[in-house]
Length: 64
Image (cartoon, rainbow, N blue to C red):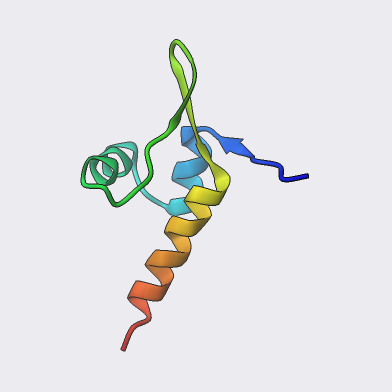
């Protein structure tokens, strides 16, 4: 069974250390995957997408 976890913005901010405006700016620039709709006024991100973003940032920062 392949379980997908959805996390809300406060947890995304905590995991990435980024502000709301930075996250949405990165989404606009195609550097962060957009959220999925959970309802009329609610969105969330796949935890796997957030983890992938973090891993990509770690690899990019450790290039020497």
